Length: 215
Ligand code: ATP
Image 1 (cartoon, rainbow, N blue to C red):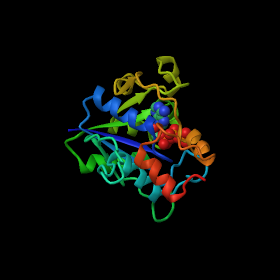
Image 2 (image 1 turned 90 degrees about the horizontal axis):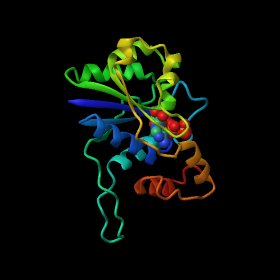
Image 3 (image 1 turned 60 degrees about the horizontal axis):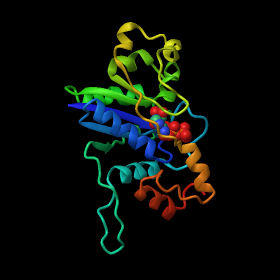
Image 4 (image 1 turned 180 degrees about the vertical axis):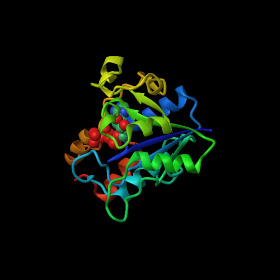
């Protein structure tokens, strides 16, 4: 079983995240992609805008939209059966940060026979040396790093990470994703009452609207 850990703030989850997940699942024959909203992200300044509960619920809706409602004509796109949402990075009771290395180690204990992968966009991977225990992170799982506009994938770009040849062999690059969307830009647009049609899964857009998020 090939299982991928895809962590993020998902504030909110958007088309870029889903495209990254489906492109990597297709290219690397992943059986399962676990979307893991992070409770307390140690590397991002300040708290998230939406609560953990809302971000978790939006991730669940993106992965498992409600069945079509004939009465309202609400047609949500079909769920990708490889996608699931995990609470591995639920906020800690003492408010301390959630470190990917801890959640990944827990996942490895839970699924001892699985091949584990971590999915990231190129921008996050470039920060790897700031993550807690980068060498252990590279030992616990193989990594799939995906292109993002303004963050092209190239060997020279990764030089500052000083990966050993053995570590480099565990990092796979997927340069076929070109999604010009970021949660930061979406939050700004939502605040200006732009519904961001096409950039958010419809069930997520409905949730944001109903709960008055990002206003
Ligand atoms: P923000 O704009 O607030 O930083 P974000 O979407 O980059 O939001 P996260 O939700 O933490 O932040 O992203 C989770 C992961 O998804 C990260 O590894 C990030 O690099 C990746 N990602 C996000 N958007 C894209 C995109 N458009 N293309 C490729 N990867 C992306």
